[in-house]
Length: 64
Image (cartoon, rainbow, N blue to C red; front, side, top):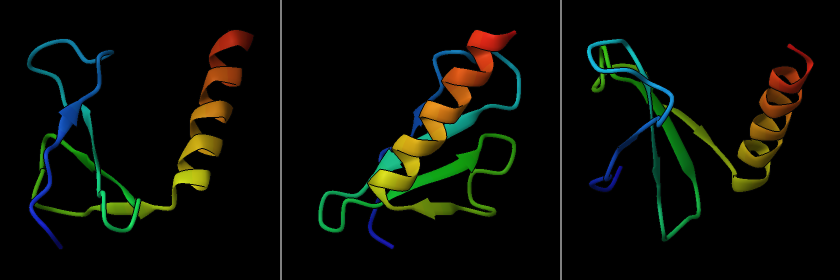
């Protein structure tokens, strides 16, 4: 895996375990990891799948 630039979720307060996201230019893949163990498990998704995930999360948030 190439060197990735991770970005922390803007919804994460300081000191909490948060979601980090990185994009890969060459393949377009989106990578997700947790800040508590950033070198642990990394979930990789295609851009369309990641957009679908975000859309679903936004719909859930609107229902609450």
